[in-house]
Length: 361
Image: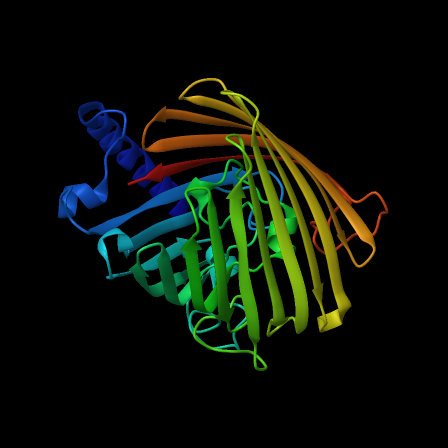
């Protein structure tokens, strides 16, 4: 019954946004503009994501053989714009779906914020509040205070901001998703931004686990017109995973108007269980036109001496401005037959087909 209701809701929304897009141009329908007007400093929006996989990836997509509502997301935001002097803003995000369990502040002590605090609803579903922060900006400097997404890595939790439906082992196992603390960002120039801040460890929500206290910072800079280099590091007491150090390097190459290549490398060392990982991800994208884009991701991820590999081929199809459909085929394998817990424990080798649709508003 839940599957039928969810699919019916998606089709209804599809029809509504299709009609709205046809009358509002290529930018599609925008909930914030409709409710608050184009001139409002506040913005409200979100998306709903529904997907299916024939096997578990072991990472987010762990409820195969059924249609899942992965993310139904709503946010309210006011951007702090310091271009005309001091300004104040902030953002709150609330989401429901099967991705909630991995989006909660699981670095907290149990029972705090949205982690093991009655937010899980059964059958893999639940609620999460991954962001709640205020922001102050003045000139080229801005400071976030509260609960916010990490700067680490290339892939992110928010579905519309990724090319692939599935996620990399590196993103899921070797990076924080969220932090609570203070983060300052300064635009040195049009091409370079530096970041520095304090957080209460990894994946915490307004609490600390075993005295979590760590640095989060780094920089992003343009190397010519076609290359962007980003280095982000964290070190200190990460909380639930102990003392540690990590860094993420992302190099984004615009090869030409159609081809884009991304190289990512992460390192994590944490004292809890002597967790030691390294990952290398390579992405290659080809844009056919405004509606069609092709992509592949190849990954090597090593944890405590055991290697895992995966390669994913995907397509992004955008039939209208508010809707994107992402079929993919993923093959992941454990060449040492380690049956690593990061893989689905039913197999050391898996071919996984997945497809999802994201409707933004």
